[in-house]
Length: 233
Ligand code: MN
Image (cartoon, rainbow, N blue to C red; front, side, top):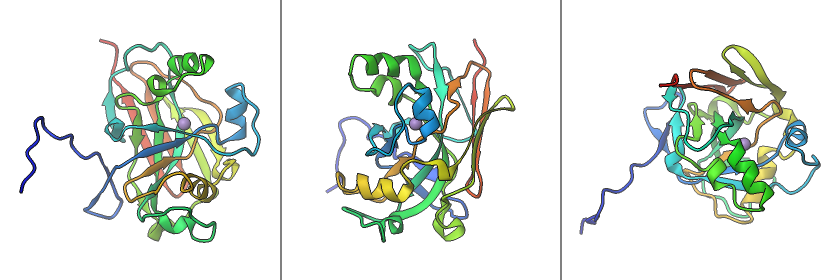
């Protein structure tokens, strides 16, 4: 029997995959916090090799690279965070280090857009970060590049420019917890499934953007992600 919905069911969020007509359907979006030492320091915390921690974004927050979006509501400090994103293509639970990366279908460039004022206000009060992190159009994604094309990138430039000026510049090898280590850890707590995405954290140099700004990020061998903020009305 066909299910009848009392309201229209939400559309499945998708991300294009390079070289494929098929798109990647987004299930959950996990984001790693403070995974580059220099960024942890700029956020006023001690960078060390600690257990990774996570927050999540809703699948409906996905925005395709190249989009023009409005400056979001209820913030005066809207930040970019350039990140490597791993796309899960096979189920994995309690992954071993030897096989953890087998679960990755591919990689993409992503922007973890953040209402920094709301995030920091929540952090000070020891409240959840949702208003600062999980809001509409906050997860920007470039196309996924399959592992069959690029393997598993563990080094290479990760960079972000605003209006042509470099704001973030680091190397993937600076990750405190590598993609492999994150999957080993995260899969202790969740049965990861195809469709899950992992935003692996941002390097130092986060900062604000304003209406009319153009954001362009890239990672060696992986690709690029762009976002434009609509000019002020
Ligand atoms: Mn982030």
